[in-house]
Image 1 (tube, rainbow, N blue to C red):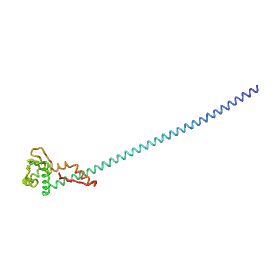
Image 2: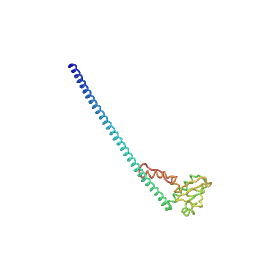
Image 3: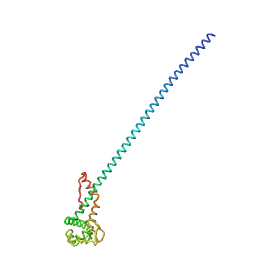
Length: 218
């Protein structure tokens, strides 16, 4: 019985030793697994933080670009307003220059005659009715035929309309049949040439392109 007892004890001891070894292996494997899980978690946290940081940087860059674009748009709008203001101021000077022109009888009559001649030639009919403003009616009425002959010769009949034209200067012409009208008043010329005038003024103000054209060349 002693031998059998020793064998059982030895077997029990071997089993316990194996159990301890297995337990140690499981503990070690568990530690390795735990370490791997923690490392994976740290890596995921790091990646998440990097993504959040990148997202924050991208959002900050987008916001910066938005602010820059908005600022550029505001600056451009302000420049456009200033430029337009300068163009409008120059257009106002054109109007004042035309008003001053009317006060110079000799110079204004030469311009008026040129506008009259150009308008009659453009209409191309032998009988035309001319409308002028009230001041010019008083100025030219008694010398009308003389002005017409000097400007257009004797081949065309130009009658003065009985009613004054609402304009600051120049002449509005209508064919005797009433089928053709040409507005060579100052306002009519400016209206026809407004875009061209603004472009010329802009070019001269900002020295971008050489300007061309004459306001009264047709």
